[in-house]
Amino acid sequence: MRIYISADMEGITGLVDAEDVQPGGRDYERGRLMMAEDVNAAVRGALTAGATDIVVNDAHGPMRNLVPETLHPEARLIRGKPKHMGMLEGLTPEHDAMICVGYHSRAGALGVLSHSFMGHEIEDIWLDGMPVGEIGLTHATAAVLGVPMVALTGDDSACAETLAWDESVTTVSVKSAHDRFAAKLRPAAEARQAIEEAVTASLSVPRKAPQHAATSALSTLRVRWQSASVASTLLGIPSVNSVDSRTVQAEGQLPSLYRLFGVWMRVAASLTGQAPYC
Image 1 (cartoon, rainbow, N blue to C red):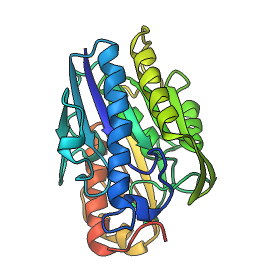
Image 2: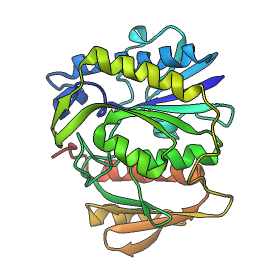
Image 3: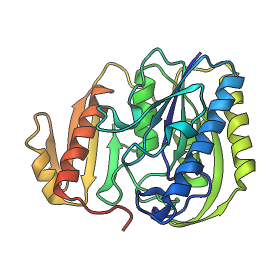
């Protein structure tokens, strides 16, 4: 059984602030260790369920957060950037299941460190008219590849967003959001045991076809940016169309549309360069 783990950081046990998840932050080094422990709990759960191959993609920010020697020795790490598929780098149809560790809710939600991919730069995203953030777009892209998202860990807001998108996903809430930078924390040992047990359980039952899986028909991705400058610049990319002064959209097939969105973000980063979470 081949398992793919996409590891973000905002939804990791104990982390609540930008200082916990950004390089140079006062508690970033501690945050990296906390991230490794949550990921290792998922790896142990997958191994218990019979996984024979586990790939972990460091999917947060600089994508160099996981220190290789802190990762479980049975897992292989994809680290660094640029990555053409970003948070889904290395995911292929040969994987039997995907697990998302440390995920967070989308922009505008009252969740811990909530945002959609780029801090405050992206205000909203829609896939085929449905509001999505990192959870929804990741789920939909994996589903097209035939890989079900079977488990996700994060705060209670991220878990609720996941279940609204696909109620078959097993979720583990490691903290309860009190606001965007405050949460009631689940004890670390308890959270990691819950992650391990949930992953084992999620991989030990037969899975139906992923919900919301797109077909070979075209999908439409629409993004509303904070900056009109970003939207106007993106119109120089073939297939990108204007919806209004700050909103663009494109049609295509996933996962190619997901990769195109990654190009949009690199363009946006070159034009803004502002720190997220302000």
